[in-house]
Image (cartoon, rainbow, N blue to C red; front, side):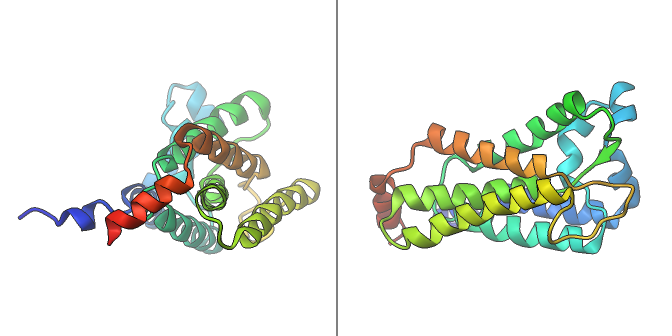
Length: 204
């Protein structure tokens, strides 16, 4: 039996994929250890760790905050027929691992969806600003708060909301890269008010 087209076209596949795998990984220590960014293991040939680190979380608060923010933003993005969300997730996952590997040799282990979550919220705000004339002040304010949060985290050298083990790190650099991914996705997909009107008409 085929799924109704209206359901499958709105199903937030990318969001569900990242959320479900993150939940499974947190509850399965072996998988968490296999997927975490581990600098020594990467240089031994385990290159997948460069892109799988976002699935790994180091505390319950780390997991809950990331899943909540990423899940809500991702769901909102994908149910509005946005075409660029996969770019946000792909760029954030890959660029963070590569840049950290090159620029931070002192960083041994890293993980978390926070970069993708930040990118998802930033992309949602940019998408809304470009596709609708409503509530622009709200979306712009959220973008400013994201920037302020990253600046505070860089200054304090510590994440604002989550608590993690001292052996592990949640990096503001990943949040910044998430925002870069959002900008790239918006440039690539070039959303417009016409697209928003068309999507609204299709959903009726």
